[in-house]
Amino acid sequence: MTGNVEIRESTPGDIVAIESLYPQGFPDEDLLPLVRDLLAELSATLSLVGITESSLIGHVLFTKCRVAERSGQAALLGPLVVAPAWQRRGIGAALVNAGIGRLKDAGVSQIFVLGDPAYYGRLGFRPESLVTPPYELPPEWRHAWQSQSLNITANPLSGKLLLPRPWLQSALWTP
Ligand SMILES: CC(C)(COP(=O)(O)OP(=O)(O)OC[C@H]1O[C@@H](n2cnc3c(N)ncnc32)[C@H](O)[C@@H]1OP(=O)(O)O)[C@@H](O)C(=O)NCCC(=O)NCCS
Image (cartoon, rainbow, N blue to C red; front, side, top):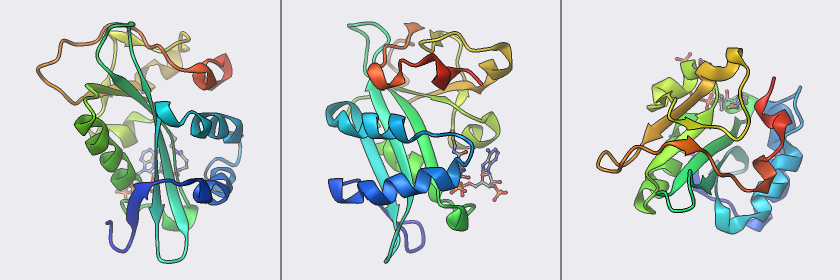
């Protein structure tokens, strides 16, 4: 719990509320097709929500993936959204940290994210150069590609991230 906010895995009954969050958090970007496609891939995703007594106020998705067919298990974080009225209360951090804890327990060794280093750096993410995203990033976005290792004894992953189909759209990886 973060204050009176519960973090739990989403259920099918949450989907309408999850879908209403994204236009609020991303007014200039339509992430709903991606979110819907990822939520349909239940075996490949971890979907967590933040719930107050009356409403769903945050959501994060993690997509399980690998770097090579036989590499250790990895995950990609995103998207992450918190309702504007609930931002800056630690809910984004609580969603990310809850996901990291669950994925670590499930044997995931490294989590990747494309996002603002000023935010994700505070959550333990560092610039990533050994593993590359599925599409080449423009120079101004390269510093936004980051990762966090969950298993210090695992060999560092190296190569291109192998992601399921919803992420294989170049528009998601270019400004
Ligand atoms: C980014 C987001 C998920 C953070 O959620 P949150 O619950 O407000 O985050 P937290 O409370 O854990 O952390 C808030 C802190 O991060 C900072 N922060 C939030 N977004 C930031 C950003 N893009 N860059 C740098 N710092 C950021 C805030 O300033 C705040 O710090 P402060 O209180 O010391 O000033 C939320 O602002 C949001 O939904 N934004 C719109 C969607 C979005 O940009 N998602 C991220 C896509 S990768």
